[in-house]
Image (cartoon, rainbow, N blue to C red; front, side, top):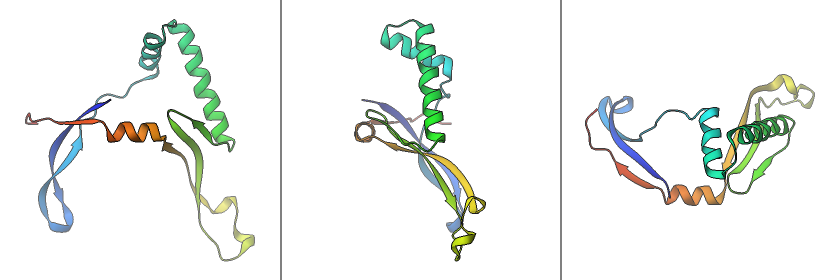
Length: 129
C-alpha cells in the first residue's frame, strides 16, 4: 500500500476573483533511469548491469511497438497505446494524415493499479510553506 502526502495550497481562483485553497499531492524528484535500475536490482537480486540491460530492452521494445501501432498490455501496470487527434473534414477525400494535429501515448492503469490508488493512504502535511 502506498502513502502520499497532501497539502493545502492557496491559489488565485479567477472565476470568483478570490484566493482559495486547493488540496494537492506533494511531489518529489523525478526518478531517473539509473535510480530505476538500482531499485530493480535491489528488488530482484540481479546485478545492476543485468537489470540495466533488461530495463533498456523493455523500454526499447515498448517504444518500438507502440510507435508501430501496437497496444501493449502489462497485466500489473496497464495498457499503453498511441492515439491521434485529427480535424474531421466533411469530405472523405480531405481526411488523412494532413488533418492530424496531435499525437500522444495514452496510458490506462490496470485494475490492480486503480485499486492500489484507491487504497493509498493520504496524509496531510501541516507544516507551513
